[in-house]
Amino acid sequence: MTDDINTYDVKCRTCRASFKVQLFDSHEKNLFVADKKDWHCEKCKKEYFKKQTSELSKVHKEIGFQELEGTEKMISWAEKIRSELINKVNYLKESLTFKDDNAKAMSNKAFEKFFTQWHTKTEAKWWIDNRRMTVRDISNQIAKILETIKA
Ligand SMILES: [Zn+2]
Image 1 (cartoon, rainbow, N blue to C red):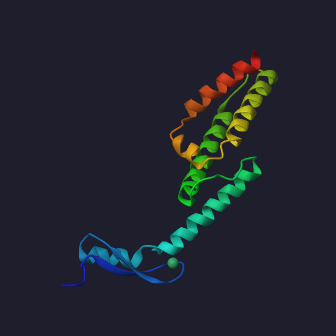
Image 2: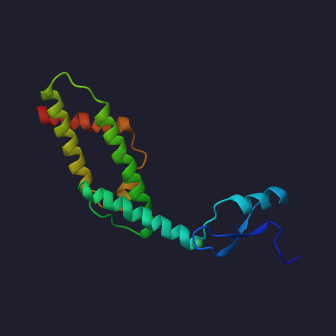
Image 3: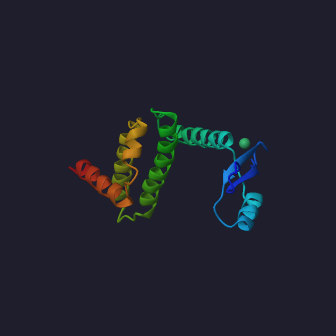
């Protein structure tokens, strides 16, 4: 037998090109999945990620971040991580409460300083290496910056 029994013909939702996928459930279930799922060929998938990456990098540029350096694959991944980490910082910033305006101003300054440090991280690898940074990690770093501002 030359044909792989697990191989099914599907159509790309974006460009309508036919391509083959391997599915490993029962034949009946596989036929259903092959028919119902939104399939996207490798080329369209790549295009999609490229578009997503360039959109993220545009958004990041608007808030002071530079373009990332590295391989296309690394940049694509790093851009996503960067977006998630920025969200964590903003989440932290919004969750804080202050006893007075002065405390709030100091905190804002610390956040500004923190972001300024991140603006200089233009290597995709740095973001990938730091992808597991938590809100708590960020909070600790902000606290340290706050100490130096107060000193
Ligand atoms: Zn396609």
